[in-house]
Image (tube, rainbow, N blue to C red; front, side, top):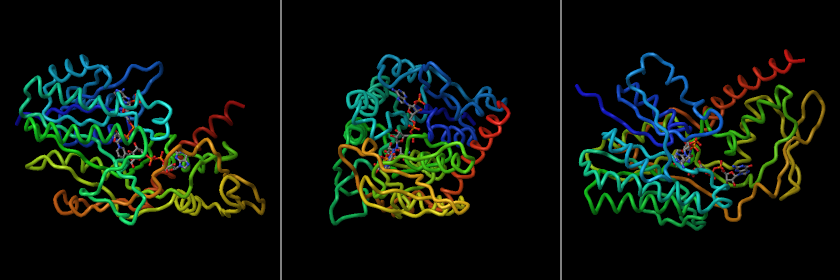
Length: 357
Ligand code: NAP
Ligand code: GDD
């Protein structure tokens, strides 16, 4: 049987790397778009590239979602059966600093792909758009979001993603393109970027454990998120494109925890006794270790955003019913997975530092 061909934008990111693994396991030929960077940016997929089993199944191409010709030429050459558009400037906080660039990549980038599919008349190509719970953001009585909830984005990132979500729907309805969106709530993993809050926390705690770091500075620790594991979620991205008809799906756990609850659980798992004191910018986390008390978490104004989505919780009923969504990871086992990995990394750094002395 002819192998399916997939094209993944954002393959060097958290989701892209897990999705590439999954697709290769399913015997796809995987093409990924990587950006030119001044230092290596393929750390999450190097293991796939050097694996001899993938020699004729895994290809990387330089490209950028801001470059229409490049996107068009790649799609014309590869003629993929499935396109997964995971590439984005994906940091909400950064989108307030780089709103125009964020719109170009996370908004218009999607249009560039859809236009290429349309111009090239690729009738069989299926398209997946990485939509997000940041499309929501209403603080009201309706606290659990589903596929019918109103979109009220609160950030330039959310607005760019709303454009992508809507243009995907428009191309589906206007041109009959198999174009679907997964509206994914926050999902994390040991491969999560270090500036997202969960990884910032687990990485810090692991480094603190080995004496590599003193203090952690955070913003709004009362924001609540519906946190799942990226491994569970990329499987749903694939399943969404295996449906008979294109459609949109919420992927969420249905449980919501605050950043502070995440810290408390992570501290418990690593064996740190934490006590909180104070309020607002004066709130501090105190670590009680070996009978010594030390302020190790502080709140900093610069990590607050000009606008915030305070509460996110998703209703995953449609995904459970149609995609047979059954996440393997819980809030606790997600944190455990991240801590184990970060402890390993911190331990290696500690040994290296000792050997350097
Ligand atoms: P991520 O780790 O930040 O990865 C983003 C990817 O996009 C990276 O490979 C990055 O390349 C690439 N990229 C950035 N700018 C680009 C450009 N101009 N042209 C081409 N590629 C570009 O994000 P993620 O967590 O894997 O998320 C994957 C997708 O799902 C994103 O679209 C994100 O917005 C969306 N999403 C994520 C979540 C979540 O909780 N993780 C939830 C909902 C939706 P470099 O490696 O070179 O930077
Ligand atoms: N990044 C960060 N850094 N966030 C902090 C910090 C900090 O120091 N302190 C508190 N927070 C709060 C943020 O204000 C936010 O309310 C929450 O922690 C989560 O922040 P992030 O981890 O940056 O994720 P996000 O929810 O803003 O966005 C992620 O999830 C979206 C889906 O809802 C990203 O992955 C987006 O790409 C994704 O679409």
